[in-house]
Length: 492
Image (cartoon, rainbow, N blue to C red; front, side):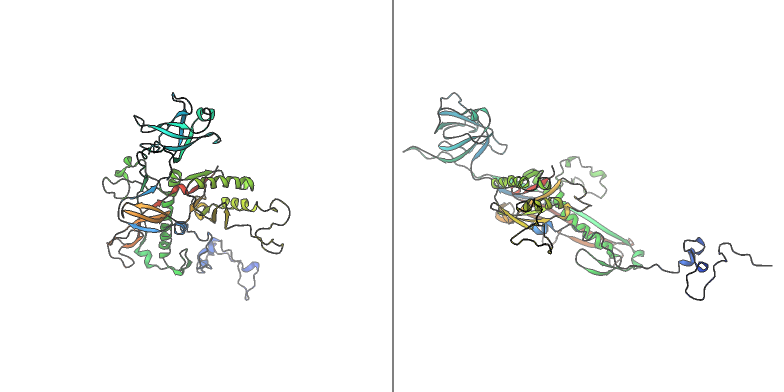
């Protein structure tokens, strides 16, 4: 009788008396024969997490430019002032059966203008829309109210021998610059009521949660972390809860930026919506920053930038300044830009330097850069005309998991300071930042950011479910006031 050799363990491996690596004592750890034996040796474990994507959070934009304020209603309503002076863009000038210097002007009304604000005795300036070079100053002698709501007016020209062809060939613009009356005449008839434009927005309810079973909570595994909210140290299973919380905080801001009003709210399938939904409750949506600027703001496409640095890009920017002059002309503004657009702005400013296009060393600022010093090719701010601009990168437009994937949004210009509006709830004029968030709150309920634990794990005893559920909720909307002072930069 003899032992039968196990073919799984080759007999050719001979241990050595000293720690010498030779062919006879080499063990192949990938060999199936030794796989069980090698499991007694634990792998070398790095307990510290590697932050390969840096700070992954995206929120912070609204904290820089706005504020958060409570409200108690399902809707926030505010009114914005209209322009002070009387002007109309689409007008037709014709003889209208009159002999010059008398003529007629027909105004194409706007949707929000029930009647024109031009009155008898007003002095007006008329200019052609094609070039703006042909002008005519006239006195309004008769406002024809019958059936036209004052949108046809008879005028008397101050100068000229005939109506210019440039005025009668196309549309014209007119504005009131004063009035004139003869001696002993009656006063101005009628009065101009100041107009207000009212806007509104709806808060949306955001929800998220994190779940962990009781069994997993009993097996504690530690890991050293440095979280984006500034804390560091050792966490166990709540590491995932921390990331869920950070993700939800980002969603609270991203929803305010990307939100859209639901134009199809009437057809929303309540019956098939997965969460338990209260009957007859529609999903209304909310108007975010981008939607508000596309509807009421200034949208500029195709900033020249690196494709035409220098005068070309500055020419583009001057077009933006001319538009700002026509709006509120707010002196200080913030530029939140994508990486490429921020570099385009740097190139635009640098091109103003005489050495920019030459082979000589670049010289920015008061002192010329030397060969030994580190060059700073970035600009944090600049002044053009009567405006100051402060430039910063907006991570939301660069991140590979958000607008950085592929986006037509290159940046946004946000005016600094506050605006005066009439608050329907308070019944008075108030000053608010141009961008601010309103969240639902009362004396007993604050829905700015709610977090609570349910289940039967982790100290909560609210149900017999063997899990710990961390719930998150917020109800909020963004108020974009005076959107005519914002500029949205889009790709060509």
